[in-house]
Length: 119
Image (cartoon, rainbow, N blue to C red):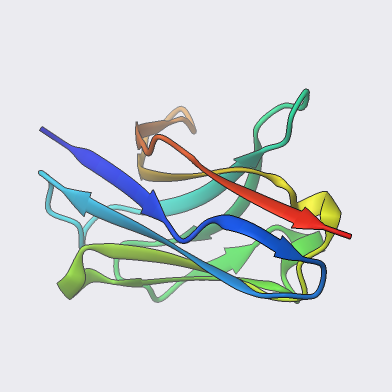
């Protein structure tokens, strides 16, 4: 059974940093691409960052690239999202995803973790 469990969320003030983690189990982790998405209340889910299986290709959504960094440690089956200089508009539920399918969707999703940034 594949499980993706996020952690590291919480309530912070604007300007703070957080690092989200997503631990994968039940699947070989080092071969599949992974990503982070987020969904704010009343809005559609949006892409945040992508990383390939080896970790050699990684990028964040253009508007976030200076503040958000995705990484992974395959030996630990763990995906990370470092978020710096957080803003109230970063408030959302953040989801990790694994194994991008040919149609662009993702096979596995975490349950989501809340990040709230107060002004």
